[in-house]
Length: 493
Image 1 (tube, helix red, strand yellow):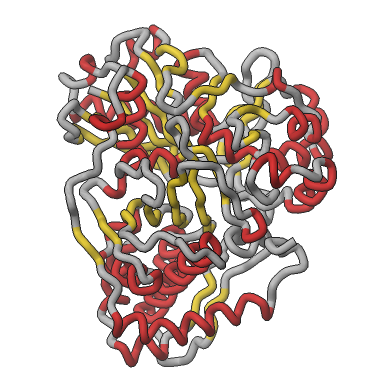
Image 2 (cartoon, rainbow, N blue to C red):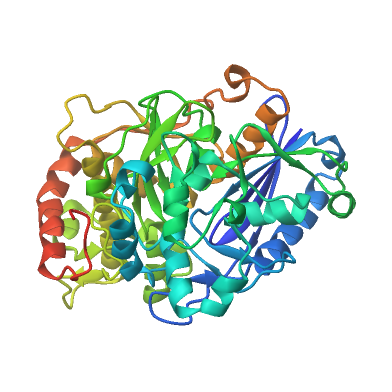
């Protein structure tokens, strides 16, 4: 039995996986994001721990006999967040999250300080990454910066509470801009540019390696055996790839979580920073991945649900699915940049837009526009990943994340991307499954046994009639952004 813990932005999910690949139980607890100023996005780490303990209590109620059989624990989590600890291990301030845009000015400063930064990190400096956040803190909160002795990523702070050790994995560390991604080690040049050194950083392991042991007091509280191994784990998307068995070059997925992601596995390091495409280490040794990221995906539908007064996202997406072709052609266009954007624009100041609203439009039209706009944003990301390539993969992509529950949205994305999408069971919990699988690997399991592909699920093929309807709307969508792009946009810099 293996326990997977996934620290998301909107909640903490815990999951029990047995040796037959069956999910025994899943529990979760919600989280809230604080936005005290424009562009800011924060959570206090203590909220994460409270949510994790609440989820573990639920899990104990659901499967009390299974917990004592857990042999190892895996961690997955939201990437890029900056958790700052003082010399005693106390948290100095709320964590600055992945979708925080305050550090945009620091990105140019960082790349000027290290001209080889894109070659070292494989990535364009973006405000969501961890390194620019520390530059911002050094300038705007110098007392906090001076007191900082350890910088941890969100899931690794949970590990700190569970084990007392500061350890991270290669995939999550790739999103800091402090990792030499090809060499899979911390870059002293990138750290020095931020006023940091190796002593501020956690020890690095592969995601499938043991990385600390569970403290006795935590084990007693959760009904687990003390001393069981905690795996290195992975960033949420690398863990999701493990959860759906994407380990070979060309395999990948589309994620409809709070953010939207197109993910592709590589068997050698390759990067495309000029198009704001991420190049990160995978959660298992000897593999890397490309990733296009949009900052608002399922969260955009949640926003539209609140805006229209629909009872929930399912009700709004169901209403949108009833629109016929004529209504879809007349629907507004939606730019999904509610919190800025990464791929392909790298524009923290980008904002969302509903264009073409008229008296006759209702909540169903708006719901459709938002779902379509997210699909177009994912299409932008896929195009950026393979621009100019002659050997781009064409095979099926898995579909994961909470938004994957919507058949209508899945079909819309398949037609917009021109790729077959495969939705497996437990697709909404792929990151937690991946975390549990990484625990299994850390406990001695082999990739061929542990990381098998899930059973075939619902298949969504691109539809020619839908693609024909979408294409002219996609061209109009792409033409909208340049008309109001902010001066900070720098993806092509």
